[in-house]
Image (cartoon, rainbow, N blue to C red; front, top):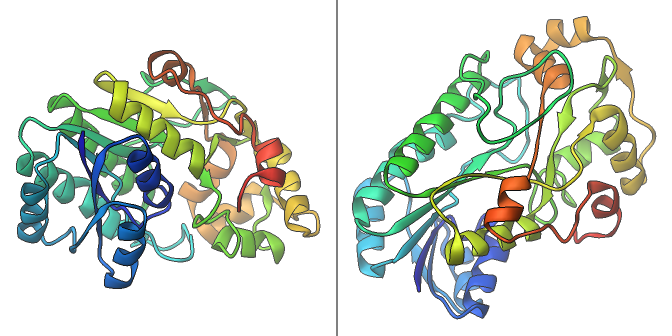
Amino acid sequence: MRVFVAGASGAIGRPLVPLLVAAGHEVTGTTRSPEKAAAIEAAGATAAVVDALDSAALRVAVEQARPEVVVHQLTALPARFDPRRKELYDETNRLRTEGTRTLIDAAPGARVIAQSIAFAYRPHAEPVVLDEDAPLFTSAPQPFGAATRAVAEMERMVLEAGGLVLRYGWFYGPGTYYGEGGSMAKDVARRRFPMVGAGTALMSFVHVDDAAAATVAAVERGAPGVYNVVDDDPAPTREWLPVYAEALGARRPLRVPVWLVRLVAGKGVAAMATTLPGATNARAKEELAWAPRWASWRAGFLDAPR
């Protein structure tokens, strides 16, 4: 199939493009960087250098590729994850709204598969693991509220077009915040990422290689709908954070009270740090015939590529 990967030089795009090429697909991948275009070409794909927020240029790139499948992996997150920044998601929000509309309009008849997030579900007082039918937290404080509303709008457009939404868990592995040199790895190593309160927030992780494999499965056999792409082991912060710190060779994380996080970082950060629900991958396993190689972050943090 002819597959157009919007965001081919991102954390998922980098492992995804060679997997698609190896599976026999004719791939065109976008990047904003001429330097990164060489890596896309080296993987056996055609590179399209384009700013995805330039709707006219993006439309031309899509039309020239004549895709049967469009894989939307566009984000524009800053190098350091700092949830106190109100503008943290602004550019990514535009890519998830304006960019999605351009991709859909430029490829009528193509199947669209879009990157979404499995950590946008409405918080719960007790730790729970949710499926894809649970409501999103569109009323969240900023900057999470605007980000979740952009996600919901993107998902609506994709589903109305008969496409697939892949709600990925927290990425770890090369090129991610949790990967080698990533901002989360640096913060944990410096003990700047503390455990908040009792560490009750549930996190659902997925290694980028597993996320890429799930995306190939969606390209080849996915039915329209929403799928959580996460590992088998959603876990509270009090469990995963010390293991992650140990994998980095860092000291055990500090613990801070919830009230202090509310004061310093705001209610939204405090809510995420204490009431975030996990997600189940049962639907993706059954309907995409996919299973993560790294079934748990417990092994993945130690053994998977960083």
